[in-house]
Length: 67
Image (cartoon, rainbow, N blue to C red; front, side, top):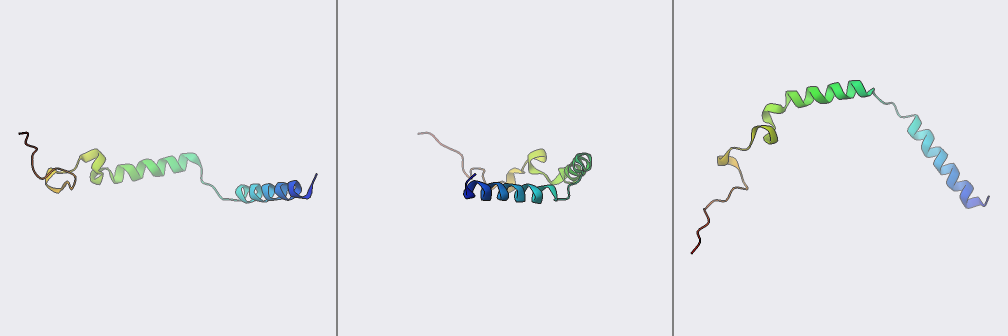
């Protein structure tokens, strides 16, 4: 082995050790929290409720007229 590949391997091992030491929550808990958040905020979500035409900044102000 040359010294650069040994150094690269050491960096990889250090990175893997760092990733292995990260505390993680269980998938079931994360999924439950995500569902609860979505349900709690669904009433104010414009993708679910739509945007009122009076407050829609992307709606054309005037109609298109063809000559």
